[in-house]
Image (cartoon, rainbow, N blue to C red; front, side):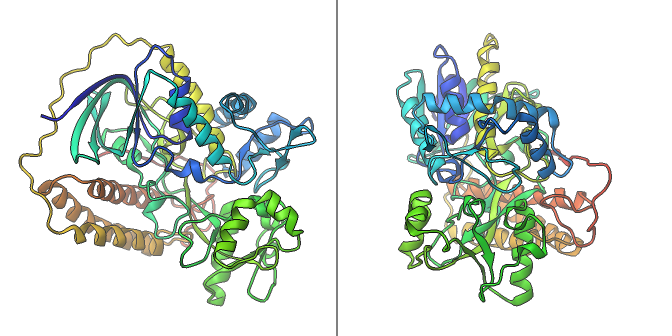
Length: 519
């Protein structure tokens, strides 16, 4: 018989959102914290740039809100954005309380700027902000006796009845046994879905698990056509998913071709500080027009001492591949980076399923719209983790969960064809990159939809016949995420923000959210 666990709160995901929510929840609550891999493995850990917050006397909330709305291309929820922006200084203080030491200059925050911002409002820890946040949050979590950590556990499906959530079936990757986690409240904090694409800045954990599970549980999934492609991922055969922070462009870094010619002013008057969708499309256009494998980001006009001080991680990583960024430009390509859509939530992080919450990149709180402004993502994680925990702390825990059967694996057999899983995984990601990428068309989207339907049928059959595994769970989620992205992209008959369709180059006057529901 498989194990059953009982907790007050189940948190699936251990990025900044998951860890912060665990810390903010009452000490009186029993909390299960589920890590798909190692506790610190995830997109939050690798976030370099920083967190946007109004901390300068010359800046103000309205300017931050205005910039965010402008970047969101008409789809930002102003109420949610205002809530996030006004909570930002408090979020920074909460992180400092757990030990995060933000970079200072003359006893004040060293604030940088990034694409879309009209002022310097990005607070950071050198170029490893995410790493500092994650390690300090984790150190605090480890000291909480009411929190139980489960490492190397991957969620399969949510336990729901009558539009209420009561926990999740979760695979223990160490024993390959499925265990039931029963909880009064469940928080999904599993991150985004950029591994649906062949080239991504994200770690291997970003397979859209939370969004796929929520879709199967009949949550509303919103605006999944808006995948943000980070313009500058290091282009090197051995540099797996290494991001070159936008902060380099914020400090004057120039995008150039092989001959050293700058090109961004051809596409936007803001040049390198245009929003990421514009920069990514510009790079994509230059690469396709000229037949180049990459373009270059040049910061070599700065003194070496300054570069090493401000970007030590990037300097060291590039040096390990024989690139001295104080002398040479950095080869870069766009890569899938951030999922702007997700599970529809309100300001308390509630979904449309009772007792089910979603926070961080997995959620659609409305703060990004059709395009995320740089460094608003870590901010979203912290702000909505706090509001989610506050709502749960004020909730009642009286109801008894209904009885759920243990996972039944008696009618399936171990797979002898694991190559099928890896083949389908690769095929999905290539289809998405080639046909549902930075620039789209109706023909490409319809072809991708046809191919993904065929793959979905194969995956469903494989899932029905064979024992569950971590790879199979991710494959099942990945094919569903790909289908949702394609369906969303086909539904949007315009070009807006991160979604660019050659057949609908214009933007419609009235912005409308794309809502996908389980049929």
